[in-house]
Image 1 (tube, helix red, strand yellow):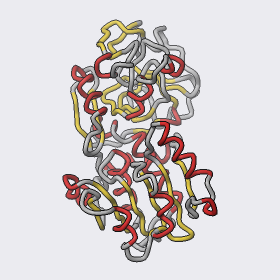
Image 2 (tube, one colour):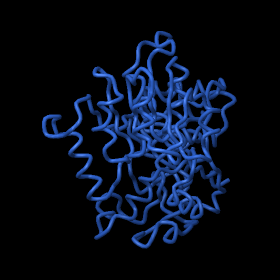
Image 3 (cartoon, one colour):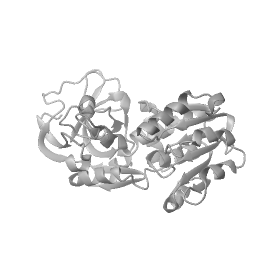
Image 4 (tube, one colour):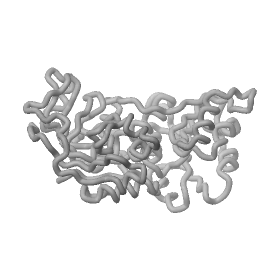
Length: 351
């Protein structure tokens, strides 16, 4: 049980000039639960972080202008929402105690908080965590939570029951080499779907190795024309990119009438926000698309998280990531800001 009143954590106070420049290692950072025993709500777990994976939202929230970042996460704060580690304490009467006891390895995700996963200790909700199966390394497990769940929730609700797709349910995943895309390709294939995806030239082989049946190199030709030429149309489109802005409108030409367009990635600029709003609200009579449109907001789902972890441990799928040492966390953030060409960015724990 952790009883220290301080911990090591990468923190920032203001990141308007770039989070990677603002991060500093604090060896005496405030502990999220400094009392012994730690005060935890019934549904809370205290976890010693062994590895964390970074999201674009980690630096986007920290870099919000005009002091807005402080309204979301008061400084000093540690970035990071995804983690893998060991349970060091749990709330009394925790319903997850049978599967996530003290000493157990778990993976999970946090809401934006001052005590993010680039610190040694985090406080997580039990329903946002799942056990790490035997044989699954911490770095692999840490890459799963947000992107794995997002991919799962973009796909599973829209396809036939597992085993019934039999290659007949056709999915297009736009952006197959990113964090969500790499998981999405593999989840769809596990569930029997036919998968078409898009990526740049350098990631074509990666997407094929993950199981994609067809890969469109969007740097060679027109993506929309390639999709219009796809035989049979698609039952589901998952857009992890957000561009081209007219992908949803044009999907009337290659998404089946009963199909669904799920938006994940989106341009965070004002223009991008207006475009997204238009897609959600503009009827086809006014020039919008006619297919069902869903904007993805990932939800905690411990059972789904456990299922993805089990698939990964069983080598049915894998996490794709780059690894940085804890001492190199600013470099990891900088890599994230550069938008890595494939997979996730993972940072090992403090020791």
